[in-house]
Image 1 (spheres, rainbow, N blue to C red):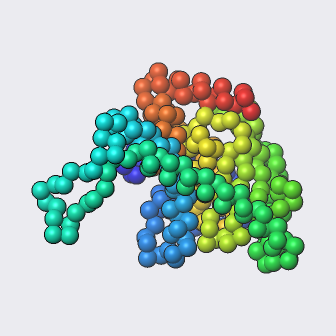
Image 2 (image 1 turned 90 degrees about the vertical axis):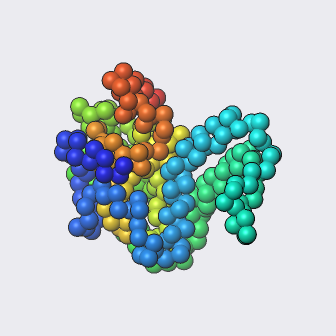
Image 3 (image 1 turned 30 degrees about the vertical axis):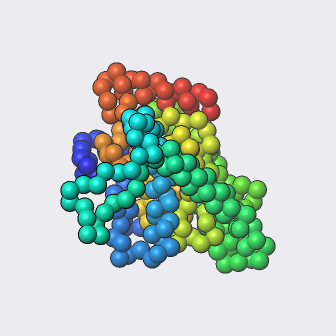
Length: 279
């Protein structure tokens, strides 16, 4: 599925290169399925957390369907299968309601963790810690480079904090986002790059790569460099005709319309335009 229809869309315009150059192929799916041996334990935990936020709505929809379809089994134990026995038994019971509560609690915990990063970061700013100085310098460099790019209205530090950035982007002419002003918050961990940035769209945006929680899904060409994250965000916004790839969407309803019938695709475009008018 990752490779499906990969070559079916025309070449697209890409964002300007910002920060250090990288030879990694743009829009690669490699970061979706990294080799476990290349990840430290902390990087793998972060990998799982980001994907939980990306695909949260899919998990939620599956649980809600389970609650509706299996309500008569709620609280009943799993039936033992003929192949189970001699220590190979899967004990448990049907409890989608409890699973839903755990899912929501985990979402809230991850959001609390994300919002704690700028607070942690302020302490590092006050100490003139190396990562705080480095991020401030990177922001100055990237913001200066993007001044020549008309689609980026602003790239600023929220309240002067280098651990939380705001990107303001205006949709280019003749694109699906034309004229829309999109504000994006980029939360950067004090443990970057062990923990990767988490990116949220503040403006209303009905888009296959934006979840109802506001999580923006994108792939940087080089995850170690903040500049490549900015480039990845812009490339995602400017991809007007994405190839079909179920792994590269975080909004199930929008995805069904975007890659559905001609009528569905027209409805997707209308909903996208309507959301831009709310910005």
